[in-house]
Amino acid sequence: MGVEVMARLAACAPRGGCSSRTLADWINQPSSYTQALLGVLVAGGLVRVRLGSPVSYDLARPAERISVAEIFEVFEEPPSGPADGSGAPDGTGWLWQSLTSHILLCLSSISLAEIAPHGQAPRSRV
Image (cartoon, rainbow, N blue to C red; front, top):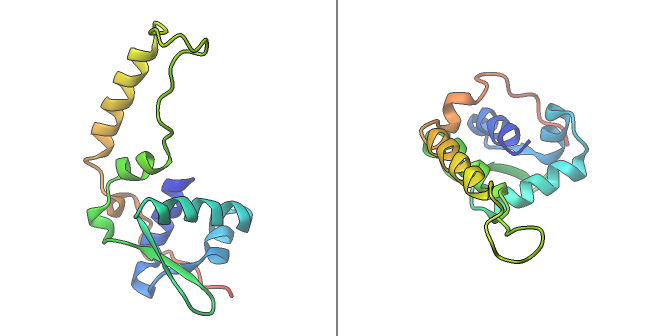
């Protein structure tokens, strides 16, 4: 859902951003969930908050300069060791780390602007 929120924010960029309620309605999710996603994106430096009435959110950089990989990386938890806590390789951990690296490498070549809906921003709701 983080990529979806970012794509919708990119569509709202020409209007100066969107309120969390507008985004929540647009992605069909509760406001509290949308606000939590926005909090992670703000903390990750991809989104900025514009104070006012209502508070709005906007991309911290142009969509052309934000890769899809950056969005995934903001939400990704650090890899953990084996469940038994031994620190020994679990046999497949290296495989998943390798696949993740290759997927992120591919996604780093795709900009947010390439996946954002164009001209489809909803009317802002207060």
